[in-house]
Amino acid sequence: MPWDNIVVRGIAWGPLVSVVISVLKALGMDKKYIRWVMWILGFLGLFLYQYLSGASLWQSIVSGLIAVAAAPGFYEAYSKPIQNLAIKTHY
Image (cartoon, helix red, strand yellow):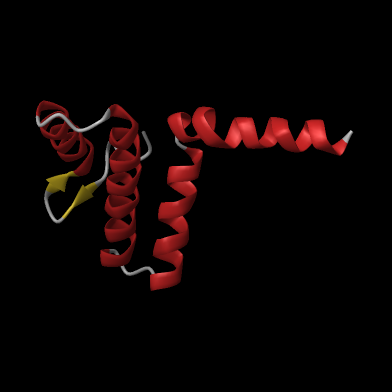
């Protein structure tokens, strides 16, 4: 994922997201929510990284959203079906 190698204030964000996901799975969280938690935490990590590195609030938000939207799982689960639907309804 785009946030795998991000370090925010000394915290490696990819492993942190993995640990949080593992804990939530162990606590019995439904799998359909795990994906959303992963993307939210990924966005948060990239947002914090950009913002704490001096980017504006707007730039940080946009960077986080672009990274999440570009993540392979998000693309396969949501962007690709929406794109296919748009193509089918266009013709």
